[in-house]
Figure 1 (tube, rainbow, N blue to C red):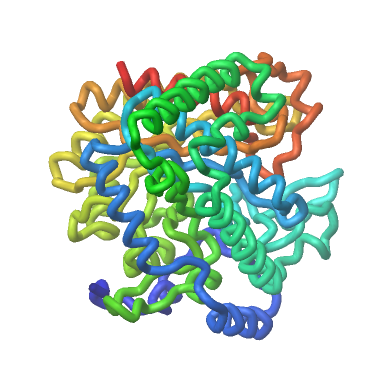
Figure 2: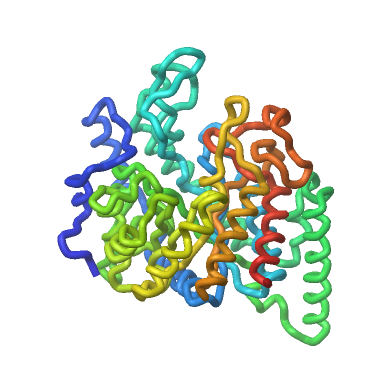
Amino acid sequence: MTVAGWNLQSWQHCPAAQQPAWPDDAHLGRVVKELAAMPPLVFAGEARRLTQQLGEVAHGRAFLLQAGDCAESFAEFSADSIRDKLKVILQMAVVLTYGAGVPVVKIGRMAGQYAKPRSSVTEQVGGVELDVFRGHMVNSDAPDAEARRPDPARLVTAYQQSAATLNLIRAFTMGGFADLSHVHAWNQQFVASSDAGRRYEQIAGEIDRALRFMAACGIDLAAEATLHQVAFSTSHEALILEYEEALTRQDSLTGDWYDCSAHMLWIGERTRQLDGAHVEFLSGVRNPIGLKVGPSMTPDELLALCERLDPERAPGRLTLISRMGVKRVGDVLPPLLEAVRCAGHVVVWACDPMHGNTFLSNGRKTRRFDDILGELRGFFGAHRQAGTWPGGVHVELTGDDVTECLGGFGDIAEDQLHLRYTTTCDPRLNARQAIDLAFRVAELLRA
């Protein structure tokens, strides 16, 4: 069902925050036309399936794990990096499913997370003021004025790399790599030596024993597709609206519009204006939608956004992603939970414990593992008090052995950040920290 007054270009009549200053409108127009002729990256039926899965989360019968890179990089695009991120997400899902006893809906921040909102339009690099780096979909992070010019051709490169990433993800998740009999193979060497890695190996051993027991009982494991394949969806922040418009298609079965750049799109803290272009655009597509909910959000504002994005109150349509910061979550979240519950919106509540806990250390952005865990505890505590379901976590991570977030296994200190600090934007958990976090979340779910 199309929202009254909505069409594919209606967002263009609204104020649009965080958009690049494209230097050549004619070039942009040609690129948008080229993208509009490309095949969709995902299909409407896949997005509908994800909405159904998230409906189970909204009803308290499943848990959402949304994880992946802060900002995907053209330069670091490789089969190994995609595989290693997927390994970590699969490991986290096994820990959560086994430890908490609930199905886990798995969504990657992958195959499209190439643009980032920024707090300023320029930045100082080596004493020179340059256009801010907005993600590889828009410009280059090289410290050069020409490289920082927004280039519409990058939208096509983002599409091509997203298509290749999706192709590989589908091959991994449907072609045997995600088979439960391979749980040991997901544990990378530098992870296996950590406490979290050893705990994970114990779970993997118990899964092996359970599979052997089932086979001994005469159960045909080869016929059980759920043991050999994984449902895995993709998501990104719907930031660059020309790209999103170009990849939006009308479903031939239902007549509804779907943004076929990803299964799920979300609206960020800086672009959630009720009268803004991002809310307008995503109000009219039928994908499951996420909305970042920060500490400045009021109950009235949140209810207005819920009504705009989810007027039918459809379970699985809307995921509210809380990102309050460890010091604010206990005060700000409870009245929002109460307002949404009383208004009858059956939403997924997920916690992003990272974005509200970022600070600078020696010129580098970082986060403390203890603050991340502290916000998660506050999130779960608020839901227990309200009698609502803490439905998921949303985290930035990598499969690489980086030193970007402080603490966790290895107790990364501030003077170690420079050792392996490779992110193009925000600091990410490394694989050991991510799996450790999954065990902590499983404990919170069991409590």
